[in-house]
Length: 371
Image (cartoon, rainbow, N blue to C red; front, side, top):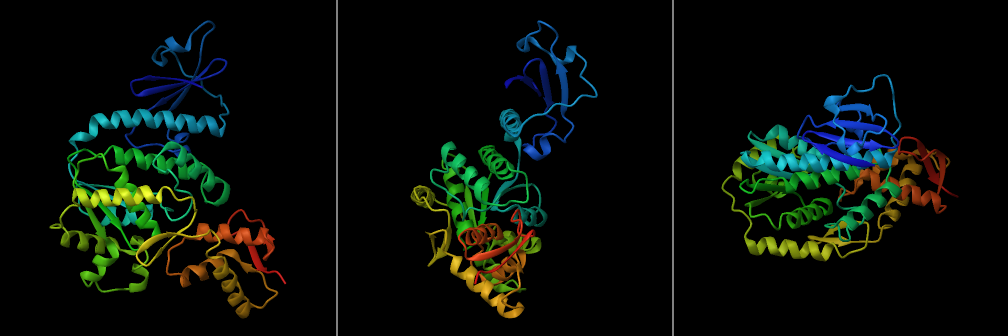
């Protein structure tokens, strides 16, 4: 599919004579899910003998009452091209922005930060899942493509296929867009997901001269003796911190010192070592990120189902979401329901579990131990 840029308009040429025109209305990066529903599209047909290279939509009337099919590959190409242009436009407009930038793993945690912290500020939420999936050479395009393919082949996200790839790519753009004068605050906690995220993000920032501040949300939560609603829960993930507590912690941390060059270099080296690993599961053991075999939790899954069978009966099928909910309540490491569901499917395929239903999501099937 050929493309052209005409200021805020991007042209996409589909053989033999169709031109889709997208108007950039917002500096926000787009995803496949919102691209076709945000009202920025018009469709045209080239006249006989008219060249795409000289076409201008202002001189023509758009088609009405017609629909065209675009496959997923074409939509994804459009997303990438539109975001490339948005990135160029943002680089010209964001340098005047004031206020700090806050980076955190998971959109839910980012939502709490947005509500809790005072303006001006910008919060960037990574899509999470840094503790699962391949991270080999993740700082490069090939490594990211391998990661996207692994998620597509193994993880049942309740979103469209391109969700993770779109959000991950857009977050990389947002980090690249941070103005050089803005202070950067990275929030994390003592778990493999956020510790992996921390090192990856610091590596992405290695060529930026901005002051970078680190905030270990759980350690600060304890240090400032915030009345705990559930201390063990807060030890797991920054997502357990309320907006009010984020605000309280940040006010206390305003005199904190930024990372030194030596400290940043140490994190860069740690990421370079991590990105050489080939595993798909990481856990936090003895204050370190440890890459473990992907069947690391399989015995725990088997024992958890046995425990539920003791309550419900050995012949009863147990809803997969019920099993996963039970395990999440027992685990100290925030592994996430998506990876556990992936391992449950593996135990089905390997003959350990009987299946009832269709395993398209954890809500659609049940399991029991095979006798």
